[in-house]
Length: 156
Image (tube, rainbow, N blue to C red; front, side):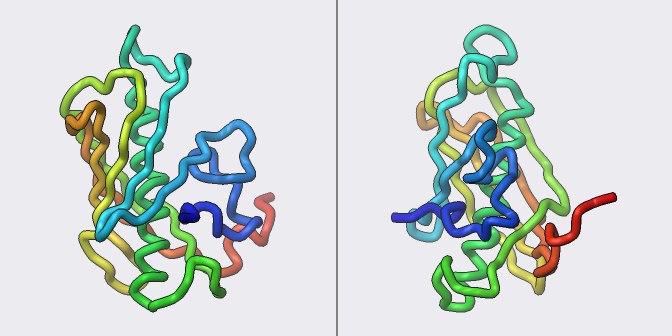
């Protein structure tokens, strides 16, 4: 199964967290698992906060990008469209809230998202980070649909 991020248009596929064209980024891959979305990610040794545990900023980044990918996939699903159809749905973060519930140990982590609400151009996604089956962080993202020309204009 293709990941949501595999279908991002080239002009908006450079994100540090989820862009397939960012050679230095995380390049997360998110897929549907029933009504939830899932990403599996293995932090590198340099993603350390204290020995043996993941840096909280990485956790926030993973929640952020997993959730915006989930928002896009949810819009395609709601419209009954394939991820490769145009116009493309892409989302940016309107707000990000993260609760850190327990230290996240280094090793494979699983990120699971659920669509809480779709309202116009906004999608609210609730996302859990799990290590060894235990929820270590929980986030809520309000994702806002990008205008079609976003990223087409270079900032001055």
